[in-house]
Amino acid sequence: MKVGFIGLGHLGRAIAKRLIEQGVELIVWNRTIEKAKDFAKETGAEVASSPMELINKVDRVFVIVFDSHASEEVIFGEKGLIKGDIKGKTVIDMTTNHFAYAKTAYEELKKLGAYYLDAPVLGSVIPALKGELTIVVGGDREKFEENKPLFEKFCKAIYYVGEAGKGSKAKLINNIVLGGIMDILAEAVALGELSGFDKETIINILNDGAGKSYILDVKKKKLLEEDFSTHFSVNLIYKDLHYAQDLIKELGVFSFTTAAVKETYGLARKKGLGNLDFSAVYKVLKED
Image 1 (cartoon, rainbow, N blue to C red):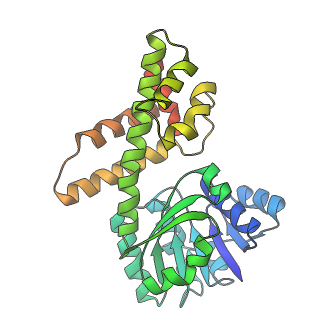
Image 2 (spheres, one colour):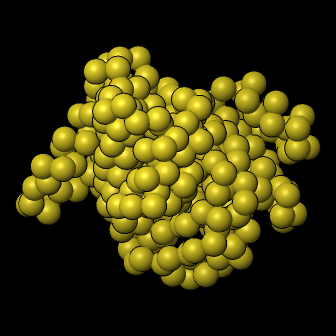
Image 3 (cartoon, rainbow, N blue to C red):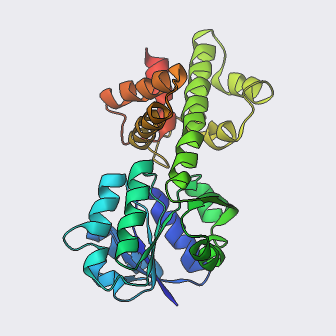
């Protein structure tokens, strides 16, 4: 069985590589075609010339791109998936989407006799390579069950959450926590250094105290070495928090925390850190 895969950014590439290592034969496409060709040289994957061509060769395709605009272009654009033989096939969208778009994409594909799973993943590059991501899936339960064996190849935790759109909502709620914890940890480390503590010492104190967390575990090395090569970018967390604010608005509630955390990453973007790993928010707090 061949499977389509669209989107070879940092996380997409890691997931695709894991799938191939687990014996899945992939046909890939990426907007920057050089990335797809480089990936093919490394892994032996087949490269499609467009999403339209790709869908003609598979019965399911993973999509993991920057945002809902990019997902819409891949699926519904000029040479998008729907321009090919889409009927009866499944689009598994792992993009962190706007919840309203995910619901619309499901409905539009259903009209064409196709299926859409709203399936964002929790985790970054290293967990992906180890097969330790979490995936939250909305859409038809039958299609979720059909594709669960594929999810098991790169995920340690798999959740079916109901209708399309709810997967995206769950991911956005998770990323409020993700962005907030990274922000407060970075601030605490910067404050510790400004107070005269050695960076490693203050990180170890936090790790043995209130700061102990999965996020500190995976970002400790980046903070210590100030190597902010991208696993999950400032631009992505900012986009996700913007979508989360739309969810908060739809629910008729408020969150001062989400607004404040989003604008911290907004400041990082303004300072030219947008393409770096989101742990680079430390630089904003340390330098200020």
